[in-house]
Length: 283
Image (cartoon, rainbow, N blue to C red; front, side, top):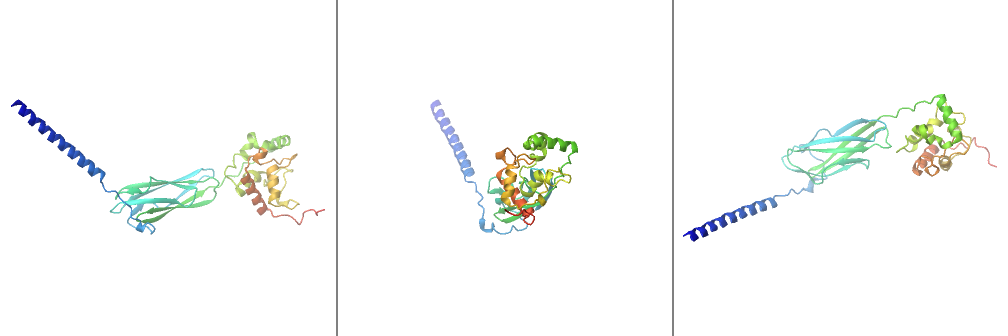
């Protein structure tokens, strides 16, 4: 009798355990076979209709300081449609603008929110900038606009007569002195990312365009000789030994790279046409 009870209890336990395994297997199967949303690309290239995504704003603007490195924006949105939406791509208008989003396709359930964070690199930029982002979804495309108002750089602080005298005395001993010590504040620290006119204003104009420039600093607009891009490139690169004109090329222990020198030479050639009329006759 006891042995018969034992077999009955063992059989019952086996049935319970087997049933448990069956339920667990069924749950695992249900999880594994959950439906996956597959975006429909049919309307991806069309304008995004109203009533699908609600944006906090589609045009954003900000002010930026003249020495600011980046401008930051955040576009917030809500899926106001009754079904799932997939964001396929977010494409900026240029390489200096980047968008931070999750891996795509970015699935947005109905009624849920999201954010697109945008960063614009301002290095070498000036004036008013206009950028854009194209957000492509499986329901259509939407353009988001950016405007950045960059403040102008303040005019350089005028040097005192004593400061000018000290600078000239140092340059007579070492014409590269303008790139060292306190002088570097004006001649080196403000050239990063600048080319052409911006670079000229930062490193050349402070001497050649100064209202009360030193007598040995020439007025570039009245040079009595013919000029061209190669003329300007040579003077910028090597300067003039025995004068206050330093060598600006990095190969000569100056601060400018080849591209910056080329941009300066091009700007000067355009700004100051060759003065052939007043040039001495060739011998």
